[in-house]
Length: 302
Image (cartoon, rainbow, N blue to C red):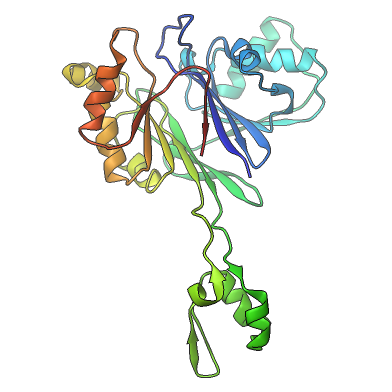
């Protein structure tokens, strides 16, 4: 089953041809979502050959322009192209009023229903639960209310050796327990799932920090993630600037990734002030062994 993230824009507040403002395209089990919608998101989607008319939902992390200014235009284009299916958008408190005001100002009329759901800046919330995965918001620490996102597969069932179970006469409830990875007693024996089943692959997870200082809520939510995309706007020499603007340094991002036992850390929200991006990665590698730099157009398969 698919679990892909396409990084459409990986820069900080100022877009340039090689690095746009924040937006990401998520494809999980055939369902597609947009994570943030910075200026230029429509062209980035087209350049990466991603079909935005079938988006199931959009997550907006906060109301700073480099994360949201592309949203009204994208939705207007979807309407012009004849979309009829309703779309869910999860975002901060002021998002819906801003969208309605913008559409009213430019006399735009949506051909489909736009359902805006407000996330809480104070607690982790399940935004959407599907058969095989869920989306959860993560309150983070920025200058204004802001949430990150955790996308995770549900735990996968163990694959039972059916013939072996049949030969042993295992009843239904025993088989079900073993498929859940549970030990269970039967006829005086303690049955272990690893002796009756094939262990499933590890459920995959992706965590997006949005703009943030290192914080405990993010560390907890990122625990064991397959991939963590973390704000790395500043290098360690500019740590005071990171604090004053409520962003993170490369070292801080890597330290949090190590503490959360993340498999791979991706440094994003990269500032134009740094010309040698490899030096940013080298800083992070001192804290975490598996670090990559975000790049516009990069497809990451979890």
